[in-house]
Structures are given as C-alpha cells and as structure tokens.
Length: 359
Ligand code: SF4
Ligand code: SF4
Image (cartoon, rainbow, N blue to C red; front, top):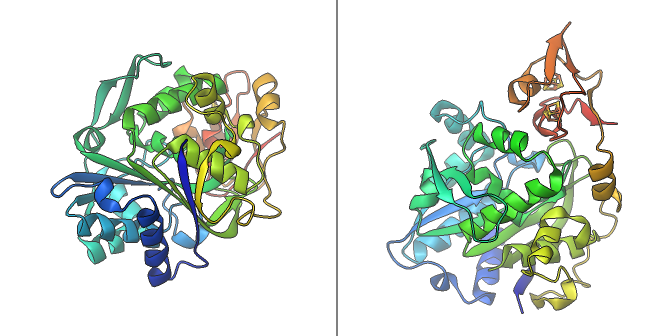
C-alpha cells in the first residue's frame, strides 16, 4: 500500500517550513533512507516562469531550502535544476535570472546547493510497456544518483491539475518540450508520456508544496490558494491521488492518474493509500476552485480554442513558444490559426499578461 504523509504548515516562515519538511521526511523514515553520503541529488522544483514566490507559480524557495539542508545533513550534494516553460528561457543567462527571481539563488547561498547551468540533453530509453521508446532529458538528471521531486500544487489548462507526475516534464530540456507537445497532440497520449518520464526518473521522494497552491486558471494565471499543507510520498502517483483528494478533485479525471491506473500502477483511490500525519478528511481544503469535473472528457472530445483577449500586448512570447507556429503577431496582438493549433495550451501557460483564454 503506497504511503503518503500529510502535514500542516501555515506559512512560508523558513523556520516553520524547515520544521514541517523535517517532520514529513522523518515520518517516511528520514533523509538517510533516500540519500547516502557523497550522492548527487537533483532537486526538481517547479520553476515554470521567472516569477517571484508570492505569485504561487513556482515551488516556494523555503521548501527547496529545507529539503536542500536535509540533503546536506545526510551527506548528499544537492543540485537545483529545472527547465522552465517554453524553450527560449533555457540558457545560462536566463537560468541565472530564473534562479534569482524565484529565490533559488538565495537558497543556494544559504545551503551550499548548486544551481544547474547545464542545458544539454541526452536521450534515454523509455520504460518497458510505455508510450514512447525514448525520452529526451537534461543531462544532470541522467548523472544524478537521486532525484527529489518538489512540485507545486496547481490547476492546469491541459491536464486539469499539475503536481508530482507533471512536474517532471521540466526534466525535458528547453524547446524539446515543445516538440513533445507537437508530437503527442492527444492529451491522453501526452499524459502517458509524462508517466513514462516519471517511471524513468523514479524520484526517491516527492514533497508537494501545497502551503499556498494555485486555483482557477493555473498553472500561471490562476489565484494563489492558501492551503497550509505539505504532501510527501515515495510514490509520485500516490502523492497526486492524495493531493487531488485534499482539493476535492476526482483523481480519475486527471489524465496522468488515469494513465497510472490503466497500467495497473495505482488504483487511483485515496482510500487505498496508507496516510500518515493528518488524515485526508481533517486536512480537506474547502472551496478549491478546480476546473469542472467533466473538463478532461470535454477537452478530449472538443478542446477549447485559445484566444488572446484585450490584455494582449503583442509581446510575442506565445508565438515564440507555439510548437506548431500557429500564432502570428499582427497589430500588436496575437492571432491564432485555429486550423493549425493543436490545443497544447503552452500559450495560455506562458503568456506574461495572462491574456489567453480558452473558449
Ligand atoms: S504572450 Fe500573451 S501578451 Fe504576449 S502576444 Fe501572446 S497573448 Fe499577447
Ligand atoms: S496556439 Fe497555443 S494552444 Fe494552439 S498550438 Fe499554439 S501554443 Fe498550443
């Protein structure tokens, strides 16, 4: 039975977060279960955009700092690494800005963790029985002895929810992510690939930052949602099933969970988890603004059309990151060729003005 720990943490006060993370890791057996002295430990936060912690788009630095400190205590060598959304940002100068703005630079200073600047990718075999034969991943993920997954709990345009499994898509370097969107146009196949990636990465430990999550139009245009929780597990899908139960979303409507159920890796039922710490009922988050229950099915049959609204400034970020070149900037406004569009919603995810709506 997969084990999941649910813990309370009311704020991002560093001391409070450090205590809550320590308690979570202790409940699962202690950091020495996951990290041996001298091991290279890749910490994978969600660093989707160059946005500060209070926007609730990225994993909060206090969580990353607490985990990095425990890894150091266990004798491991922590490396913070992510490839942010889109491809244009994945080079050393942009990564430096990303780390500074998201608070990771300060984490590195405080803990001695390294910041990844290696943007090269490697091809690795996909898991047996998976959807893809090969996966393209960042080199440091291949070289790491241990991966610790540090997602942010948020809603998501394409998949309804992003947490443990979806967070690992950031191991795919730069613009290669856009090629995956172009190649795997069907959302269910895309979710199967995400599961392949999670099975390849096999993070030893996942700690979801649900202290403040995001509801509404996530993963970047939604509203911060204070929840005061951490969700920790050795098992990515189990962590997602628990997190979904906490926010009142049916796990079977999330395609990454559906993929795991289809492969017999999970029942998708929170009742089949061994829950440590707070009970799921006691920690339930009331009034979480999730996409409507039938959203995934509706999206598969009739995906929404992305359209730029009046907030569009014509900056061109969406056009640069559209995997199929469906967006043109004309008259300082984005125009989408809906015949060409594959409904990956990268434009909605990456628009700095939150100007793209799905209709
Ligand atoms: S990214 Fe947003 S603001 Fe920029 S052109 Fe596209 S829709 Fe407009
Ligand atoms: S227009 Fe937007 S949703 Fe359509 S393919 Fe391009 S990035 Fe994806």
